[in-house]
Image 1 (tube, rainbow, N blue to C red):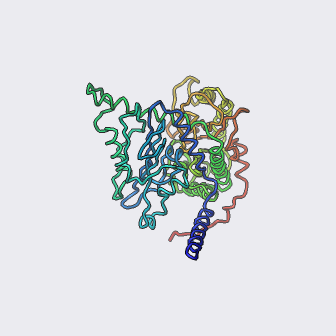
Image 2 (image 1 turned 60 degrees about the horizontal axis):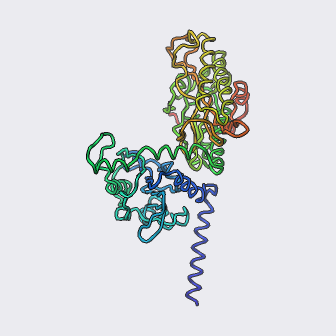
Image 3 (image 1 turned 30 degrees about the vertical axis):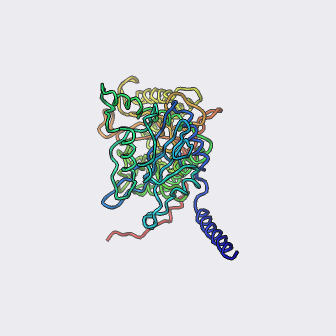
Length: 488
């Protein structure tokens, strides 16, 4: 009895430690039921007698023995909730009997390793995959090579084709080994997907292997957000919008682009956002005319320059994408305001088209028409039908687990979240009056499509030129944040 009582006490003590540790973590992650439901939705969309295979993202090397912070493949996370590398998910259309188990899915994960975990953090392991993620059948990755799956019996084996950029690490059963075993099981190396063949075995194998269909299925699932996803996505967007507002208050001439970037990203961390959803863009003056400018190394922003800030917080995997363009000194010049208000007009008109059933290409057409007419009136282009590069990109893309979330881009549906981001960019040396040179403006908001019309989720960040100027007169909490001068 005393021994049994000791075991009970030990169990309770261990459970209390685990509970205490988990209580210190964020409590608003997606629940395992969400991921289970997404796997079921995938299964319903798979073709008959098929199997879908997903691999975790690779670990990427930064330099020498330092890796980039690991980020899970969005599809893999969407379906599993698993955040670790070196893993493999298999989802069957129909029940299978393997190793005496009747199953329709199986997850292979990193094995627990006390020494490795001392260096890089605790691993879920098989028990964690079952208890925390809700998988009934899970194994260590090292068991996959001997796992008895006859892939030849399936009409379709669906997976994303390999990029061949995976390193073979010193760790057993890493992603390299999992992919190698999978290729052997499906006879992948015996075929060439890009060339026709008359060989009977290769022809039959080619019929089974499909590296295209799965992307379309996942795009259909992910382009419409569930209520659980919308909670996290809205928070990511609102955090990003507040970052824009705080930067409007803090901006002043002679600030560096890097400092402006840091203000945004400090706000993200303050709200518990784990990452930036993509490399932050802070472009002052002519740098704002570079669409994906990420150097952000201009040391002093000029008094009359515009600052284009395209940044998004990633909160629990979900990524915002919000852009504002503001005058460094708090006041738009006449030319800057004319261009800014033209972009704003195009955005406002485009947002109104975010209605269920409208083609997703419509907002872009609307924006192009308004911008071309405006540029012509300002004398920047010779006619409203002129070909030019002042507005070189589209206006609308899905956001979610990716900043450019997958989708079919057909028509707007309820609970899609899609950006609206017109822009005008007039680099130095452009074929127009030089008074326009160096003006780069983009306004980007994240729009939720609802039955009652579009909702701007990033509206907390002022958009109208006069509202921006008013926000820039407000005091900033960073005004008194003065660090020692390190110049000798």
